[in-house]
Image (cartoon, rainbow, N blue to C red; front, side):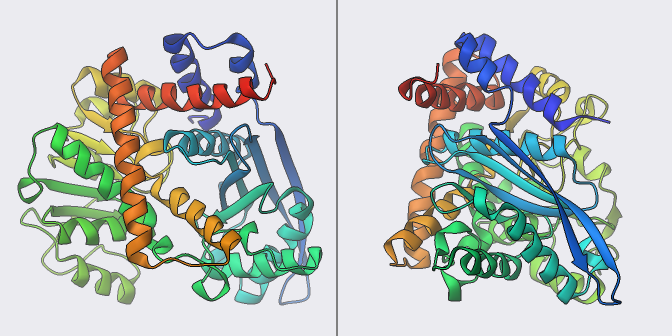
Amino acid sequence: MNNPFANAMTQLDKAATIMKLDRSVHEILRQPKRVLTVSIPVRMDDGSMKVFTGFRSQYTDALGPFKGGIRYHWNVTLDEVKALSFWMALKCATVGIPLGGGKGGIIVNPKELSEGELERLSRGYIQKIYKYIGPTQDVPAPDVYTTPKIMAWMLDEYEKLVGEHAPGVITGKPLSVGGSQGRGFSTAQGGVYVLREAVKKKNMVPSETSVAIQGFGNAGSFMAKILAKEGYRIVAVTDSQGGAMNRSGLHISELEAYKRERGTVLGAPATEPISNDDILTLDADVVVPAALENVITATNAPMIKAKIILELANGPVTPEADEILHKNGVLFVPDILSNAGGVTVSYFEQVQNAYNHYWTEEQVLKKLEAIMVAAFSAVWETKEKHNIDMRTAAFVLAVGRIAEGLLARGLV
């Protein structure tokens, strides 16, 4: 089993060698600044008591408050949370927003909990970590199996504990309590802006470009919908139960309606089934891993036929696979660039909360596009300068910016 934190450190070491990173900075960046492990007792609906384990990894705040999601998943581990907090720090630095990296998680299958149990768990988590989060300290957000509703419960619990309104403590909130327009689909939208730039670099035309998307959750389904509107041909999508393929192009709105009714895209009319493994090696021009980490490995990387891999999930490609893809001429756009739309609009949400003044969706998307295009350009320039792959280029750029923050503070 791939260890995500070991993968993250391999990526850091590779970038450090290329950029001749100061040894003290390198040493500091090999560990999170703080890691919290908490036990959360929850009274279940049947009257029994169950204790859940939660984590919060705060990696570096050299450039600003820690920032990152909270995931509810039965496979959450401390190493995973540490890796994700590291990648969040790099993601914020890559797109040039003044935030650090954090990540949280609770070991739980949320599908097995009633709404009441889920609310008590969410409030219990905040009770355990509230002293270590806040608008100027650490700002959580939604992630796997967490929602705006859960963020609203967490916000309410935090405000009760501190005795004042503090909407900027958490992002990804409902609009009624300080959420931002565009936040719900911002990860996908940011990915679309980045893909647009990558397609230009490859001299491809959207209307002649086929796309396969592994993962049809929030990010993946919005990505499919937006790309289809822009003229791309979506030929296959998968979810946790399987997938649907039509080489002439899928009708995304019909597929969404089918999934709402059946809980999966598998078996949708006018489609062939395709597995989560096979979609990655499909002969589509663009493959978008939008599910979980470590899905493209040294085993299947040699079979990748896509011209572009755009990472919408966190850490879907292992370091060994990176080497193979680069050698085979596949342009892979790393998560810390391509899925940074979510954290960028979370940053906008914080700014709006601080101002107590809110922007239209059009204003949000215009600002998002400018940041994503500039970030792609900066990463591409770094790639060309060092003759390296896009991930290593993003790491070199981001680590360089974090190093500047550490040096400016006199920490090294």
